[in-house]
Image 1 (cartoon, one colour):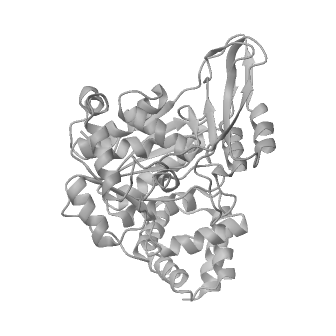
Image 2 (cartoon, rainbow, N blue to C red):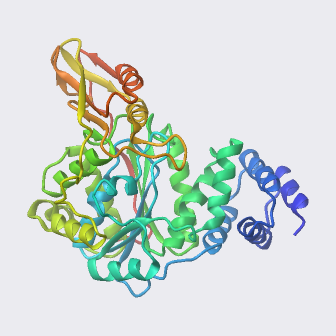
Length: 430
């Protein structure tokens, strides 16, 4: 193809031909498109955009650039994706809940980067957990247990991996069509028939306001419709962290508490909302009582234990979910009500402690993190702990304490921010 002409067409606002888009993605994947030309096209897209059809074709081509999982013989295949948040451990509860209710959850998940936590990092705080599975083992576990969560394979949508690295290096990440294509290319390659997307909105999310979240949701639903997938979206708030813990082992502990019928109310509420939408999209019973029951009667916890054991995890091991040994608190300086708890600041504090990555490949301390004694709207008393920092020998403690000191505000009255802004059911869902 004529790459300069292809780049110039988008620079000038033209609409790409399907064949040209697919040829471009093939060239990105096989290395025949030089980085500088791919980067120039990405910048043109930032300024000129892609229409829904172009975005759908780009996404499908990126999914086609590598292996696609064949899940056709598995019942009620579902997948879930979150656009990234602080304290977001929903997959750990949602996946076994859905499997208990008759769905098959065959999910490829990523690691955390920046202030957001990754599901695979959390799972690896369980000794022995195998995140790397070949396709045969992945599919066998999906069939036998009903749930499998593994790390993303390099063979899945490799063109997206190349483009994402270039976007990160060229300030072209913040493009709605490119974000939508990146997310959905991996979902299409994952093979599930029904998908629920948790689009986070707020300071701790990539989408800072509701209009941006709605726009991204609309784009991803349009991609799903083009590919024949049923896609539901929950737009959820990320002004404050989800639940009461941030940090890998801490969050797994909280997820287990939720699977035992307890846990923080906001985590349970979001899990149940996501579950209802993707179950309805799959044609499975989705009434509130049916969906909630496995969290209260032990069935979802039993599925979780089977899943973890199937991937080699040992929850009874002495080092399972071990926390960093050192603890310090940030206390309330007055009586009142917690009026603000900045999710982004909490996420950055945990990263400073070693619980997150500044760059891909960074080592993560799975035992550090922050426990929240109060959420926005809760009464607090002078001198009582607001936040507990779990650290290891003081690493990053000063930076974490500074971030957290600015993260909280106490006032005379306050109401919690909304957890669920909007729900967009999948087209055709019952």
